[in-house]
Amino acid sequence: MKYWRVPLDTGTLEIPHGDVHIIVEQCKGCGFCEEYCPRDVLQMSPAFNRRGYHYPGVVNNECVNCGLCEAICPEFAIFCLESVPSDAAAVGTIAGEAAS
Ligand code: SF4
Ligand code: SF4
Image (cartoon, rainbow, N blue to C red):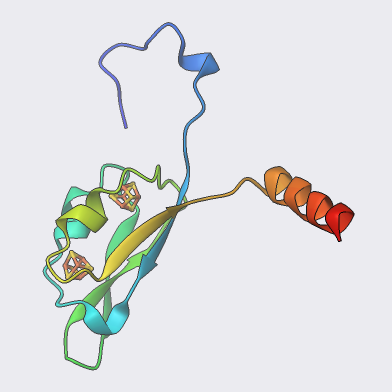
């Protein structure tokens, strides 16, 4: 995404990341998610699902967990979850092990 001017605190901002999940068999191939994703994360697959529709696939890891694809999908076939940073996951694991 290009900014027309760069905010002064850009260096201190933490950009969120998301993991996109697609329920392939629920998709009707409208392409809204691909068209409107601000980070071009999604691209329609040339393959078909069992209902005969093309469905989106994830083509990069630029997702910022904005939730637009989830909100715009008319079939509730896509959703996004916030990515847990690997070091936070490790801390959680260590804390879990200490508690047990
Ligand atoms: S959550 Fe936002 S950035 Fe991520 S895939 Fe969906 S529309 Fe794109
Ligand atoms: S918006 Fe939903 S139904 Fe449309 S292509 Fe994307 S996942 Fe499929």
